[in-house]
Image (cartoon, rainbow, N blue to C red):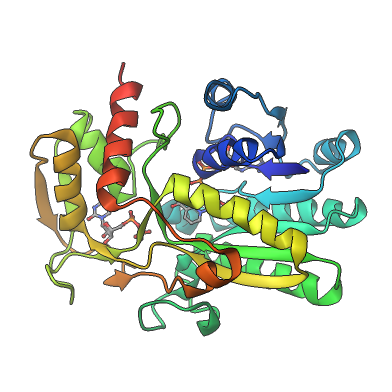
Length: 334
Ligand code: NAD
Ligand code: UDP
C-alpha cells in the first residue's frame, strides 16, 4: 500500500514515515522543504533501511502535485504540510490561509480526480479553543479559535467533513494532536525549530544547549496545582504510531472520524522542567513572566475514542519524552 505523505520531511511527518516503513507501507513524500531539509531522507533511510520516494514540490503548485499522482498509484494520503506558527499566523493571515487552505484544496481535488479515498489529516487540540471543560472530548465539536493558524485547522476539518458527506466512498480521519514533543530514540530525527522557539520543550532544549539564557515561564497564577499551564504532552513516536493505526482504520471504514491523540494526562510547565532536568542531569534556569496572551490554563485529551476506534494508547511517559528530546539535542550540537 502506497501512502502519500505531504510534509513528510517535517517533524511529525518524518517520524510517521519511519513508522509507516517499519510497518511495510510504501511512502511517497511531498515537501517544499520550507521548514525541513533533504538530509532527513538519509536519516529515515539510516533508521529503516529504506529511502522514501521524494518530490520537492509545493502543494500550492497544483501541476507539480498532479505529477505525483500520475507517477504513483497512491492508495491513501497523510496530510501534514502546512505552516504552524501561531504568532506568525496572526501577522500573516493570508499567507497562512493560502498555504493551509488553498494548498489543502489542491490536494483534496487531486485525490478526487485520482480516486484516492483515504485521508488522515493533522488537526490540533487548538480547535477546542477555550470553550470546553477538560478532558476535551471529540463530541464537543469545534470551539472558538483565536488565531488564523487554529482557524485554518478548523476550516480544514469542516471542508473534509463536507467532502465526506458529499462522497460516501471517502474515509477520513481527523487527528487532533495535543502537544507532541520528544524525538526518535536514535537521536537522528527530531524537532528543529526555526528561529526562537515558541513551544516549551524546544525552548528548554535551547536553554540546555546554551543557545538561550533561561526559560521564560508564561505565568504561575493559573488555576492549576502549581500555577503554571498544564498540557497533554505526547511522544512524537507515539503520535507517529497513531497515524499508522489511522491509515489501518481508514482502510476498513467509510466516513469521517475526529480522534484526539494525546496521553490523557496533563503536566505543568514546572513538571516538564523538572523531568528535563532529570534527563540532562543539570538545573535549568528560569524566570516567571506575565501570562502569554491566548494561553489557556489546562488542556488534556479524553483518549477513549482513540483507544476504542484505533486501538491506540500512548506508551511513553514524560521522562522518556525528555530523555529522547535531550539525546536529539546533544546529537544535533555534535
Ligand atoms: P513541520 O513544520 O516540522 O512540518 C511541516 C512540513 O510541511 C515541513 O517540512 C514544511 O517544509 C512542509 N510544508 C509547509 N508548507 C508546504 C507546502 N506548501 N508544500 C509542501 N510542503 C510544505 O511541522 P510539524 O510539527 O511536523 O507539523 C505537521 C502538521 O501537524 C502541521 O500541519 C501542523 O500544523 C500539525 N500540528 C502540529 C503540532 C505540533 O505541535 N507540532 C500540533 C498540532 C498540529
Ligand atoms: N510555555 C512557557 N514558556 C515557553 C513556552 C511555553 O512557559 O517558552 C508554556 C505555555 O505558557 C503553556 C505550555 O508551556 O502553558 C505549553 O506551551 P506550548 O507553546 O509548547 O504549547 P501550546 O500552548 O500550544 O499548548
